[in-house]
Length: 386
Image 1 (tube, helix red, strand yellow):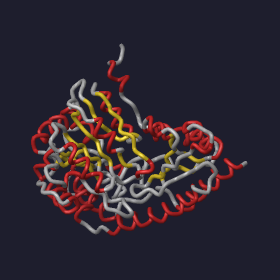
Image 2: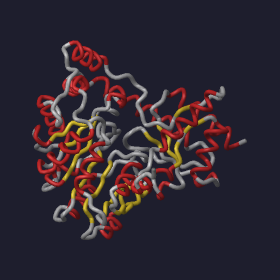
Image 3: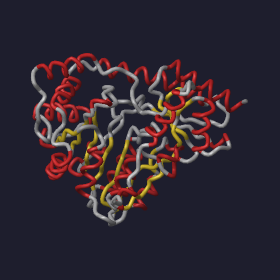
C-alpha cells in the first residue's frame, strides 16, 4: 500500500527530532543542556490545576460543544477585546485542542490549489508544511535582521498578487523573537485591507514581550472582519501538555472550522476548558513573574552569546528565543547545530529548519534556568575557541 502523494508535502518540527537525539546522548551518559524545545520550564499555576481537579470531581468528563463552552468563549472574547482593542463576542471564538488547529482548519477551509500564501521566513515550520500539504503556493517573506526581524515592506508589497489568498503574521515571532513594529503592522494593513484575502495572525506569544507591546492587525480599521487571531494557553500559562488553544475569527468562518473540528476531534476536553477558564479569569501573577524571569534570562544569555567567537545576536523583543547570526564561525547552520549537540553538549536548532532565510542562524530557547543557560554559553565558548 502506497501513501497518498500529499504525505510527501507535509513536514515535521525539527525541535522534536533534536530532542530525540539529545535524549539518546543522555542515555549514553552524555550531559546535554536542552535549548531546543520551545516550552516554558515553569509549572502550570496551582489555581489552574485545582480548577481541573475540581472539574473532574464535578463530572466535566463528557462531550462538550464542538465550538467550546459558551462561558469559556465569552471569557476568551472579553480577554481578546481587552488586550487587542477589538469587539468580538463568543460567536467569533472557536476553542480547539492546542494552537495548531487554528492553522490547519482555516487553511483547509480557505485554500485551493494555486492559491498563494505569504508567510514569514524564517518562521514556524508548520506554516509552510500546511500550505504545501494543501497544494497552495508558499510565498516566503524574508525577515530582516537589521529591521528587528520584521518584513521587508517593499518586498511584501511586490509579493501581493491576485492569487494571494492568505497572509500569515507572527509577532512576537518564532524563531527570531522579533516583534513587528506598530508602524509596519499599519503599512501591512493598508496594503491588504481592500484585497480579497484573509490574515492569519499567530499571536501565541502575544503576552511575552519586553518593550513595545505587540500590535494585533485586527485592531486596525477594517481588519477584524478579515483577520483570524490564533492564541492559546501553552506559552503564557505553561500549559503545553494541556492542549488548549483558540481562534477568534469572522463569523462566516466559524461554521467551516466547527465542521473540521467535529470531523477530527469532536470537541476540546471539558475539564481542560474549565482549567482554561480559571487561567483567564484568575490571578495573573504567575504569567507576569514568568515574563519577568524570561527578561532576566534574555539579558544574561544574549550578552553571553555575544562573547562567543563568530556569534552576533540581536536582543529579541518577545517570546523566549535567541536567534544569533553564526556566519562568523565559518560553519553552516546545520553543521554548527550538530557540532554543538555532539561535541559541546548543547541542543539547539539549525536556523535553516525554519526556512531558507534562516540559514546562517541557529535558534536557542532560553526557557531554561539561568544556571543552565550560562553553562551552555561556557560550553559553546570553550568548544569554539579550543
